[in-house]
Length: 182
Length: 204
Image 1 (tube, rainbow over the protein chains, first blue to last red):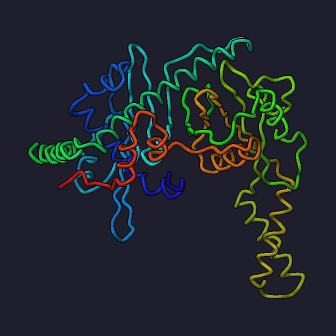
Image 2 (image 1 turned 30 degrees about the vertical axis):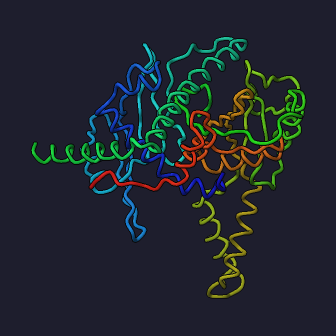
Image 3 (image 1 turned 90 degrees about the horizontal axis):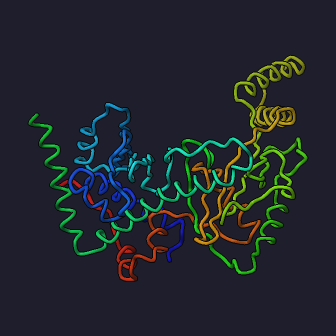
């Protein structure tokens, strides 16, 4: 194992590539999600995405897209210019239950995590049950993001990656061409 | 942003080190030994320690549980004092004026200004109460993972430090590299390949 601090900086790009791949998959091959984790019935992007473009002279350009009516056209243009997705809100459902969370590529940390609703605590004796239920739902969010991340790493380190990269570049190109024509 | 909140932020860690000598009773004792101090030190601008999940402001663990199902749950409390910058600026301006009038000087030297500001800040800190912040920490003993309910850098650094001091165990953050290296779903070949990865561009 590498030194943790060195590895943190050296491989933060893998998390950013993972988010970009999630976006690509959600638009082109969303049947993969159920293959990765059988409990996922739907996975889609939420209304928040942050992209970053680093230039050679240490300048950093950050693009934040948020809001219910925000489209991802600008994000796609940024991707075309060489930006990476640094954080992204995803929403997934399992049966009738829905989870919403923002995933940061750099450290795979979760924020704004909303799990399916749990019963409110009326008596102090109900605290333990509430904690166990809530943690089960939080753990489920990690279980699913872990499965997706490991699936991506298998692709990223496998022979299939070159083809996936070609498809992703084609997706970026076509998405931007589409915008020019409309 | 606590465990039972509607919306929460988390950092996940793997617990590294020798856990064999840690019985539940030992863990409880160690937590209690590093609990948040019951008496506030007015001169301290930063205090931290563990508190029970069910009583954030009374840190005695003797009557409180840390066991919730198969997990351990307690809290990190961090009390911090900070002087609002505008109050500090106001006090420094008033005191500077007073000193200039008393001494007949036209201005204070750089060192005098610095010393004056530090004295005023120290005296204000004694009078200002500390603001408490509570962060839940859930220890999944079976999976050897800790879920810390914050993604703030300062809180993360403090939990890592206090956890090591309390239990002699390291909290190793789960981020892309460690997630891959700790995974038992990736082969050694895949892990080796991961270590040689370089960034790609998604545009031509």
